[in-house]
Amino acid sequence: MKIVSKYKDFYDFIVQDHDADLTYIRHIGIVTKYFDDLFKKQNINTPYYSKYYGYSNRFSYKKGIGELEFDNFIFGIYPFVYSQPILRIYYKHIPSGTVEDSFIILGHELVDNLLSDNTEMNKQAYDQLIKLAQTNYDTYVERYGCKETKVTFGKRNIEDIKDAIKHYVWKVDCPDIFYKIESPVFTKYYDELYVNGAYYNNWPQEPKVGNKDTTHYVTDISFMKLNYNILKYWYNDVFDLNTYINIENFLWSIKQEPEAKPDNKTKILAHGFDLKTSFRKM
Image 1 (cartoon, helix red, strand yellow):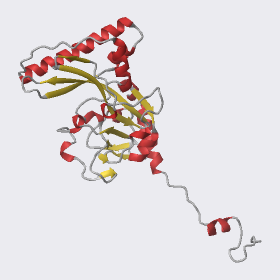
Image 2 (cartoon, rainbow, N blue to C red; image 1 turned 60 degrees about the horizontal axis):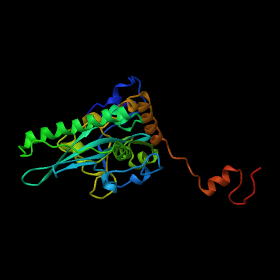
Image 3 (cartoon, rainbow, N blue to C red; image 1 turned 90 degrees about the vertical axis):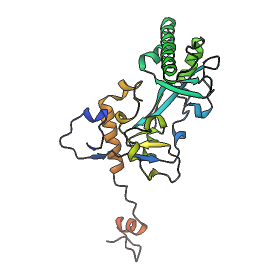
Image 4 (cartoon, one colour; image 1 turned 30 degrees about the vertical axis):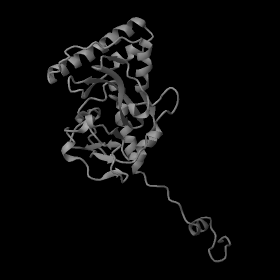
């Protein structure tokens, strides 16, 4: 497979195809039709939640200053759709009362330790999570000169934490969405991933699929050129030869010519009958 793209991506280096007979023109596109229902809540083991679908999970709050919430970034690499868990941190700016937020992309080890059945691993992971939030808050205070210089994120039962985060860690086998959006790679659209980033100055003017103004998905992107590493939790899963092969297989599948459907006359002739007499030719 020969990849034509302004930017390199992680799977470009997995295979060196010097005699490619397939070309992938990886040029950013936008999709304005909505296809989340193809992978949303497919079964009880792979629930799809985010703050936009009514799942409330803010688990720590004190004095209106700091609040934590699990959330996710959703992306797809054929044939799978993935959810990358993140920790959002909300701050109330004193004395104006305006709320700011930032987020931390969570890695494999921390999340798996939070979800572990080992109590000690749970505790260590929870302490690490709070420390990350506290450091992030201290940076916020320093940047904005907030009068409230410290905040303590209140302790919560680890089972509550597990219940909150598990809804944001999933992978769904869903090839249908890739054929709907006509691309082997995509992300749902998030301002944080694109605004002022590599693609910001050459944003597509026309949607790839759909005709409305709302952008739901961004296709044919290089993950390495997004503003943040949204592969962090799934890196070991996607940095694999199968990723390259799956993308190549998708591109081959959409290049196949549709099966010819002969008309009735052609069918009659193919079975040896004469069109005028309806008798088989001898």
